[in-house]
Length: 292
Ligand code: ATP
Ligand code: ZN
Image 1 (cartoon, rainbow, N blue to C red):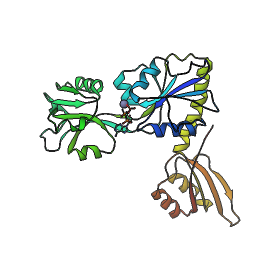
Image 2: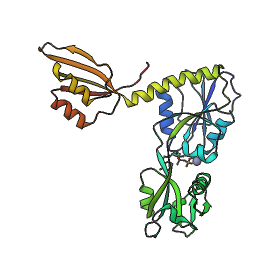
Image 3: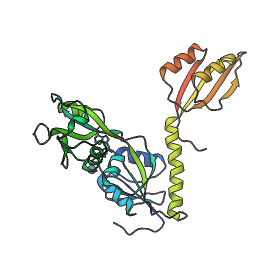
Image 4: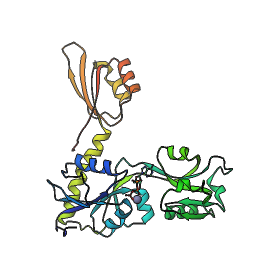
């Protein structure tokens, strides 16, 4: 790895896995330009003093905690599991999953409290141990490096504790969910050693402003519609997240055009109600970036 360039930021991202695509897209969307086709261990951004480190996700918390990387993008589950001392900056809205307890579909166990005395296979022993301790369940943890879902079939365990997003893996392996340990999502984390007032912390602040703008934009919709002026109060009831709309009179007397950013997903139901309230030409557009 090249020597650390004093004032540039290092960001650790997963090299090849479920978070990789989302992480790189996010970094590009906040304006960083870099080559990622090979995802070598290390790459430098063309237009910003940022270096990317591509790592196993399991190593990211420690690298960030130690200050080898200043920032990292990693699942909350890994941060819990590694008990890493990192600052959690922002949840990123991807990598959603749940650490779930499951048993073979035909087992008699119905709830986590019935796991007393059971063997539970997991790749998340630290998180599971904490959960069992808190819930005062005396169970045996069978620590595996992967493939927990097949452990019951091999009679290595009576239950599993594994990450699940859609539940398909559980179904394929004929397992039944009996409870959840916690929910996880990808987070931007920072090294606690980052000096306030240093060049690097100024860079982190700049990236955070962009990131906040991007994440806010992803939640925003831009809505335009035409409506009779008297329908405006009703329209605002239907879209409560609409901030100070621009209202422009149209040539047709009594009609106005309304343009506004709405802080909410605008579903078909809301559009139908807008139409009932007298609105026409309703457009709902994605917002790309925001700075306030
Ligand atoms: P690595 O080679 O980097 O160690 P990995 O195999 O440990 O990769 P992935 O399967 O790529 O990890 O998952 C990365 C992260 O994606 C998980 O730590 C978790 O935060 C998140 N995730 C989202 N959905 C799921 C899921 N269904 N199963 C497992 N992880 C998920
Ligand atoms: Zn991993």
